[in-house]
Amino acid sequence: MKILVADDHALIRAGLRAELATLDGGAEFVEAWDEGTLRAMFERHPDLELAIVDLTMPGMQRDATIASLREQYPAIPIIVLSGGDPHVEAKAVLQAGASGFISKTGMSQVMLHAIRLVLAGGQYLPPELILEPEDRALPVPGSMAADHAAASVTAAELAHAAGRLSERQRQVFALLAEGLSNKAIARRLDITEGTVKTHVATIFDVFNVHNRVAAVAAARALSSKPGRPQES
Image (cartoon, rainbow, N blue to C red; front, side, top):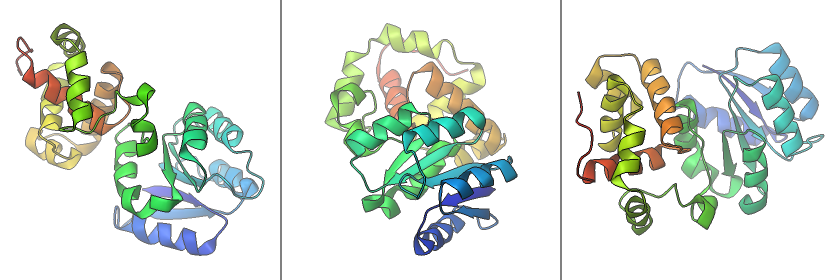
């Protein structure tokens, strides 16, 4: 896996590399420290699989830079780091096409979770946005918010969405509800982890959710409602 780490502080870049190495011991890293080197690294390394980008590096035009990079390199997911207000900055960069927003104040606690989610085809939203009214489709399974969201979706609506899934996607969806990781699902179904990621991304799209937490909530809600489709 080739990952771009972009931050204007060398110590932060070193810390990110160390943490990301726990995700993939064979990961290859390239670095940037301002907008110029950021764009140069995207151009020189079109095979990047992930870019982690500090929003406030010298020369950055914040969400405008993210939007420009997404337009030029749509296949490379971008996770934005920032010490700013998530209510303002996260919404702007997510609308610009970023696959996730991580606040620097809680970076170490959520970094690997956010990256796994993004690599599976999802979008990582900070908790501050998940709890806002317009984002209540992203509840934590088992929470009061999840119970409320599940109750607001009819069995017919869930069944209609589930009916758009293939047999294999329904199997993946059921295992998501059990809380299995992509690797565990791949082992259970005897398919590759890359195939699982593709199915998970399709599930996100079909159920109009942006992260794994919301997909699990939908899967558990579906399994709790009568008349649900049976797994093939």
